[in-house]
Structures are given as structure tokens and as C-alpha cells.
Image 1 (cartoon, one colour):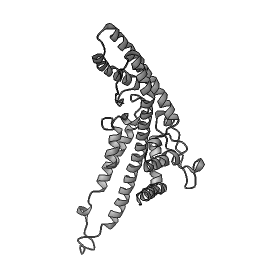
Image 2 (image 1 turned 135 degrees about the vertical axis):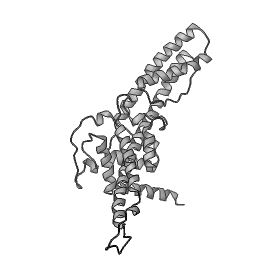
Image 3 (image 1 turned 30 degrees about the vertical axis):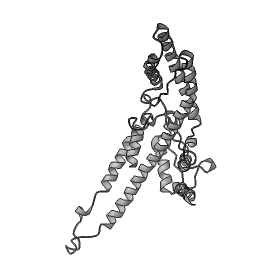
Length: 289
């Protein structure tokens, strides 16, 4: 289920309006999550392989005295391997969820910022006429996307406005200004959100706790090309080494893989368990009469 959900998050055909590959940059200029998509498919295949039965490989022992012998050692080793692979999948899924939450929150802030400007621009040209449009087609780059969306509104406006050359001229002028305004608002909102990413206002208590653990405690950032563009050597941390303010993670995050590793290590060493148990305890207290 984790593998399928992660794949659906990355795929724009199934993620309900998120950008392809969960990129915050322009889709044609970034594909930083493609490797992650391939990796999680490989891990899922490995997990399926590890789940295969070993009984058909049983061997006789003790000079043929024991036709069947215990496979407990094989089971224990491969179960440990399976748990490790599942932990890797869980780490990737958690990072993908935080990325998706940030992208969704960024788009909500953009729609809130642009809603008033869009209505004002529409009323300037066509008084009393406006259209609520789902601005969720993120498959294109921003410049092309907003031109496409504004153009798609023109038939609706033409059906409601008087048929005249003045209407057409006003419509073309409005479409050009509105597309430029949408692009400007989106770029400003994106830049502001990238500088201060925070999806917590839209999250429930448990989701908020996990989001903060990944973003603040592990210092896994909102991924964009600029955060992974410098291929510096990775720094490993000892058990007692940590970032300022008690935060855990890598001091430099040059690759997507190193960020996944930070979350994977927090699951392996038990650091994430405390956050999960806090979520469980909070839910238990809320459920008590």
C-alpha cells in the first residue's frame, strides 16, 4: 500500500492536482523524484521476492535421517531483510508525504492570494462576471499553464457577454493581463513559501507532529533543485553528533537519497518511534470520555 500510494503521489494523473514528480520548480526543468519512483518500485519488487517460500528448497540432513529440517534460520534472516526494506519504503513514503503537503499548502496560499486579484481584473472588464476555476493542472510549466487556464475561460465569458468587437478586444486584453498577473502572483507566492515552508495550518494534530519531526527535527527540507544542486560529499553523524538545537540529520543534503537516509536512520534507531507514540497517546487522550 505504501508503494502504491507513493507512486500515485508522484504521478500527476492520480495525485489530484499536484505537480508531476512532486517538483516545486517548473515541471520541464526538474525531475528530482523520478529516481525515487524507480527506487520504490525496486524496493517493492525486492520485498515481494523476500516473501517467497523457502520450503521447496529444503534439504535432507544427518545422512538422510532427517528428510525435513528447520528453516527457522532462513526465516529469521530474511524477515530481518524484509523489515529493513519495508523501513526504506516507509522512509521514502514519509518524505514524499511531506513534500506533497508543502505543495498542496503552497497552492492553497496561491489561490487565496490570486482570488481577489482575479475577481478585480474580471470586474474591470466584465462587471458582474467571474468564474471559479479549479487551477489544478500542474502538468505544464507555470507560464503556459496560466495562459491555458485563462484561455479556457474565454468561451464562458463570450456566452455571457454582448457580441461585439469591443467585447472581443476587452476579452483579449483581459486574458493577457490576467495570465501575466497569475504568473506573477504564483512566482511571488512560490518564492515566499520556499523561503518559509509551513503546511501545519492545514494539518491535523498527528500529521502536524510528524511533519514537524521531518522538517524540524530531521531538517529534511522542502525539496527543490537548488537544495540538491551542489554535489558535496555526504557527512555521516555519530550517535552523539547532532545539529544545533538538538536537531538530527545531515549537515549537507546534496542528494534526495541522503535525505531519505536521514528518515530511514530515524526509523532504524528509534528516534521516530517517540513521535509516533506521542501521536498515539494524544489520540488516546482525545478518545477518553
